[in-house]
Length: 288
Image (cartoon, rainbow, N blue to C red; front, side, top):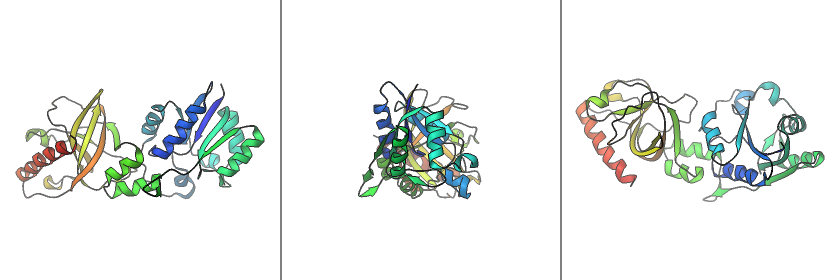
């Protein structure tokens, strides 16, 4: 079956990405709608450049699927990335993916010769492909981009990032065992251990939503190492008020709505948990 293909890396699947993907879905009348991405950012492979990702491969696939497109993730091998732009269109898009129509953003680039969106239209014409190039999407007078959103997240500006993402920034992972200290003090938590390649939010406490098993509950989340008890492992530790179930081994999604305060070391565990109680009350107020 012929396909309409949305082109981009789509890390974060922000509002500009969503416009590209939804346009491909709308154009895919009688065709499959695909969103083509890579398992790693090409810059990481070509230049050994460190990349702070907002989404895992699975998270990107789920977000793309929620818009009605099928995510196709290619391995960003050196061999693939050394292909010329024309060879990429012919061998990957046309022959492998059966593309009849393409959709990309104004700043899309492809091929070892670093061709742009205008070149894609020229090559597309030569192969009889329909090519739609979407204009820049902006917010607050600035372009919506993954790099802009990463910068906001690294500053803890989760509300501003959410405006550009179209939703709060989130992490989806399986709950792992912790030290159970919170449970003994009346504040049980679920523990997620973020991958080292993820964009790093500032250490501290956040008002969060927590989704699992079809439920969406209020939470309060600490990102850090819990210096009061001498821990050294970075983790995302979330307390869900009024919830007492066992989530070990379950997949949960934590949405970071608002930064409440920086991480700090308390003089005692009692002082720590007094602050957790205050943080929990503040988070519930924020999330109303």
